[in-house]
Amino acid sequence: MLRNLATSLFRHERIETTTAKAKELRPYAERLITLARRGDLHARRLVARKIQDREVLGKLFDEIS
Image (cartoon, rainbow, N blue to C red; front, side, top):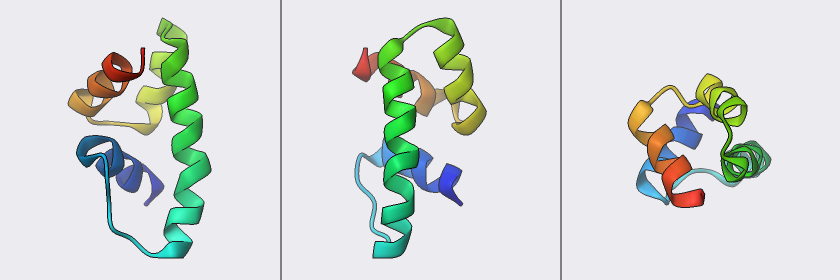
């Protein structure tokens, strides 16, 4: 569930969900953003484990870096 929420968040830059889900998603998404800011190959592969959509993965690394 968190993978799908994070993918939707990064794709649409905003999602509508319950407060409980949002509270669970925030640290998960922040960790992915922190890895994307590193920008190296290892970080990209770690994020790719969680974000399965290549388009979203590219967007995350291009915009953050």
